[in-house]
Length: 591
Image (tube, helix red, strand yellow):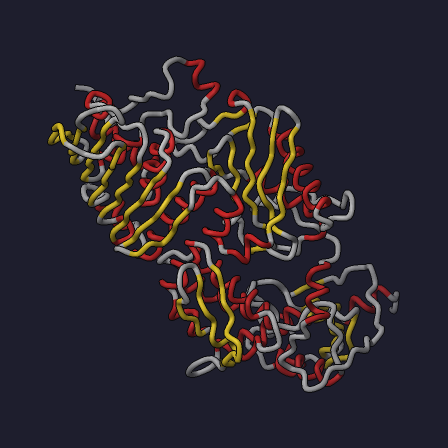
């Protein structure tokens, strides 16, 4: 007998489930999309234990008869496509006929359904991919799908799930994306008896944004309306001052399907030009309406990626649409320099001055070393020729000869501090140096971090994923000096902040920390804590472009000299560049 065997249907479905069903949120996505394809006007999602114990999706759509209900859990059975040409013009959410059999193969699955004009409905019970019961039943019109004990027969997959709060957050996040894609459909998510999300279903996108992301964000969104005849781009983008460090709140919807697109995200950032601070991303909910034959959603089993027939043209149209919207809102004066070059994260990096950061630095003089503020600049200039060496990751004081200690000479361009160490000349990045000192102070404290109670507490509106992260990681936030409490709905109230942030930047720092927490995995805690520390230190530190007094300069360098790792900032970037005496002699041609 040969070694190669044809897998039975159950095993094939379990393998397919590995692509389609990654976690409870994957199930929620597929079931809600099925409800949308069924023409539902109301969809309710009920979760227990983050979706591990139960996922129930109830809709008021068209329902199924007994024959279709039975076929729906068979692999490659679908009502969406019938011939090859249909794949070239897909207009529905589902079409592959893989999702339901994949879900049914790794759970205890039940379908209860009735067509609108039928006298009775059908109930199917499936366990591990096998139909164990099928009967006629009285039930309301529409469909109810229940997924119990997800991954009960694949314990390895079950072990990869994270905490209840995290899985719940991913489920709610997916429903929020689908609600933004279909503001005409009312949606609700209930977890363990608590309503976590409601979308009114009135068809108004701004109202849906307000329900999901909060009224504060909705007020700061700018409308986009752009139509070439062949392509229509419409929705909302955020004002330049409303940004995030990740792209998770960038929602792109192609033909009413939520998708992730590096190209569209890059075009969005390009449209903002130098209005966008480095490392920041605007928020958006943008619909792209295009003929179905010009876009291919059949790229991945999850259908979350799409391929445009003319990707370059779509990139250009997206950039034009957002540029036009910002110009019409008076936020973008004519055509501005575009960012160039795709980076790993899909965003170009503008090499010009960080206008937003400079403005914040002038407005918020965040300086933990200052006792008095002097606005003068020492007037030193930086020459174009680069220094010959810099400290790199992992190098210590001894490896770079800092046993002589740094002696400050003055400030250069309100950004660097010129120093002497023995016979060498060094330049210190004042922002990174302050980051290092603050991070050392927080990490080296015994007992709680010094914090400042707020006279007027600050209120944060959070996304579903952010809410889950805050609930799961309250201990980490408290250890950093943030005292926060639930305040109803998507709101948290901040009663205390780290003392290092009393002069400004507290909200931005906290949001940065929360964004980091949404990305945490169970194996990332040690490294994650370092990133959280770096985020707080970055927002508390002296800014580039901020003039310092002689006293402030000496205090900063004194603290840096005392650091066990003065060469590298908490983000892993170099703090110091050096020019040795020998190099100075060579450049001045001294023999």
